[in-house]
Image (tube, rainbow, N blue to C red; front, top):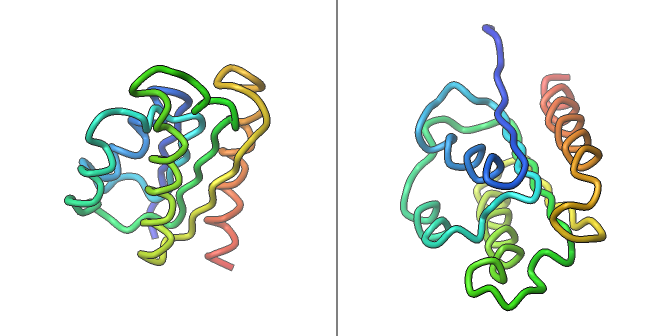
Length: 128
């Protein structure tokens, strides 16, 4: 068995981490922390496209205040993240969604570390 690679990101990079699963088969795990999954059309894209490979695990986290905005796009971030997480769960992916206290900027480093730890441990636990 060869090396395994993961992709992860915070904010716009979190959107990229999810999107990359549809554009390459190199990643076997992904984490999206406070991902920009409010991006117009992302849920439709995910519902109408297949991933290039079945990842071992996918982690999502979001601050519980991120959707509390009048911005016509950003207000859908939690709804979209939950929808994508639910779809992945229904597809049998090992996935988790963590709702953290605070806004987009609260404890970004800690949230990122939690995502990294989860995808490393979830992938290891599946191999055991």
